[in-house]
Amino acid sequence: MESTVATDNSNQEVWSGGGKKPFAASYGKMMMWFFIMSDALTFSGFLVAYGLMRFKFLESWPIADEVFTHVPFIHGHFPMYYVAFMTFILIFSSVTMVLAVDAGHQMKKAKVTIYMLLTIIGGLIFLGSQAWEWKNFINGTYGAVVLQDGKIAQFVDNEGHQIALSDFVSKANSERVQHTRSNGLWYVKDAGELPPYTLNEVVTSFNANPDVHLRTEQIDFDVKKKTVLSKAEASTYLSKATDVVMGANLKVNEYGKTLFADFFFFITGFHGFHVFSGILINVIIFFNVILGTYEKRGSYEMVEKVGLYWHFVDLVWVFVFTFFYLV
Image (cartoon, rainbow, N blue to C red; front, side, top):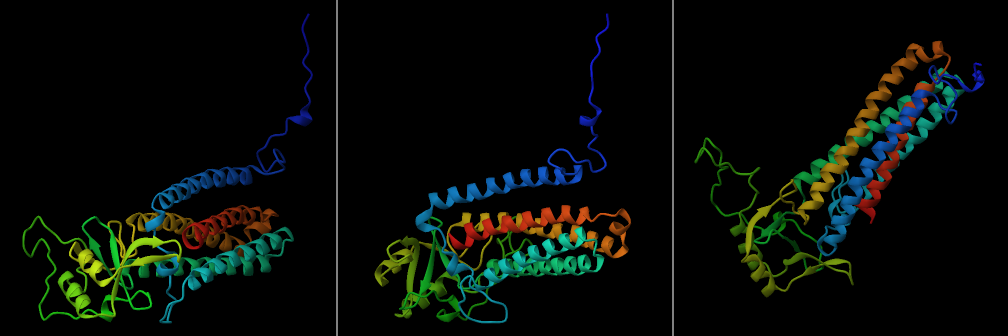
């Protein structure tokens, strides 16, 4: 006697072609969510690692308000102003993306085109601003000296405000030559460009100027500022100095802990790559909208899918902004 197995064809819907299961999401949208979740875990790992290192070196970690102080075309000390502007632009681009998706649901091609264009412009402004911020971070502002133990010592005025080497250092009348393989030993090359001043010029100018003081990486948590040394203590520290540093790279930076620059380049660079990728995808979708591709399909779901990615990139920046600039 053969057994008969009853089947319910209504529960055997094929997911391909934009089916409604699971979670009433199409295959493409579900795969985008899977990608976003995996990428979120990657960024989480990076930020947790940053948090652990910052906690480990809490007493000597650079103060963000003293590092990110630049505003384009304006000279002065404006802590976090431009970073806040960048954040606003990226969040605003998320708003325009929401409007583009909503217009797509209403099958309004003209509005989708406008809002997608605004989203792309916002992304380009943010990416350009991030490149400009990197340039300033790499070039440096004030300059500092490196001690024998690898720590950084910076210079301040009587009020405790950091000052640049160019504000007090006098250059000696001696010519300095960049050491390359074609100039000297063929197997030896100077790392990077020469700083604008020699260590001897910095030390001599410091000793000759009573209004210039030295401060260490160590943070005084009572006043939330770095420790300023007396002239006698400063002379002892400078006797152990090994080099002059301007700006930041992966080996040393004028702001303090080298790890700070390492994490900054890696995490903000990784996020910047995501923004760049998002802009490219948005541009492709934008031209498809203009060509009427989604009008012919009868659905603007592709706009919605790229919108999910764009919102994720914006949300990640909120965490990066919080970890690097606010906390």
